[in-house]
Image 1 (cartoon, rainbow, N blue to C red):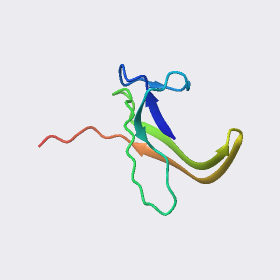
Image 2 (cartoon, one colour):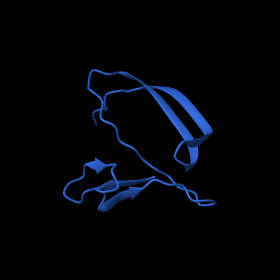
Image 3 (cartoon, rainbow, N blue to C red):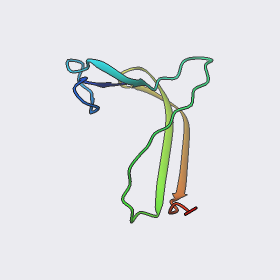
Image 4 (tube, rainbow, N blue to C red):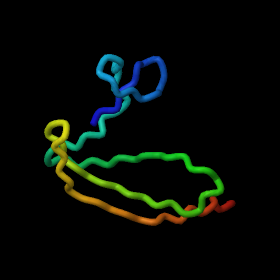
Length: 82
């Protein structure tokens, strides 16, 4: 789904009356490979994160068809010094 902003800053907005610019399009097109990266800030004290990723198809609001689900526990390690 396209992620939109008011074009005043990088804050995402959801209402159709406020969407003036697309930040990026995360939709998946048929037969086209696509790689996405999502960065999520977590407190420095957090060492283990439960990650749930779901892929679904939504033709119309309310019609959601689950396609794939991945659940992983990720250990966050501090950066190594060089």
